[in-house]
Length: 211
Image (tube, rainbow, N blue to C red; front, top):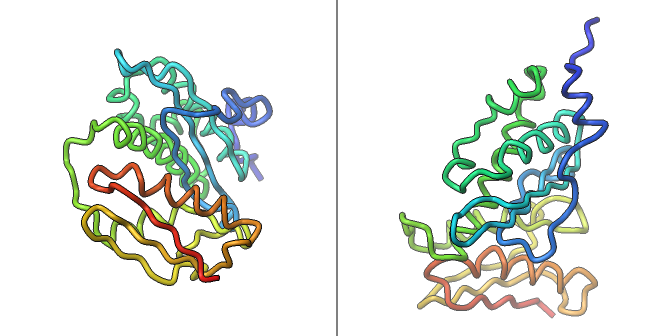
């Protein structure tokens, strides 16, 4: 049976580039779930004048393809403007790696989506979003799918941790089915506020725990 990975994939897997976390990043994105087997977090530092990605790092939970694509995509994105980095595709990453097994193609998609999510996070925080979609409960639910439940490794929507969400006059209210003194409550609250607080028409995010 032919070995499914190219030599370049193995090189990036064994010695991945740009691994780690940027403290106080200008933008960050998280895609996937460790419970599903693959997850990528991407962090970027952006020059405010040129909009060039000056530094980029990633953290990966997953297979060789996941790690290798995170490595190569951060290599490609570094030094590019945000608009240029948005155009990076999973196919480009796969070709750069000498191809990926078809069953692992989703890994390159995950890394690209992580990069795009980090760019979107930056643009939202700096008022650069041109198409301003009103924040609805559907938008809130979609954002909350990117907040992990540390108890399970799945997101807080799929694990039914959210009892209720509402949005009115720029105020978002999220009711979480956890006691306020739970060990993971502060981290979940911080993540919820971060995911929702950058939305252009949201002035405040209230996170309420059940006890």
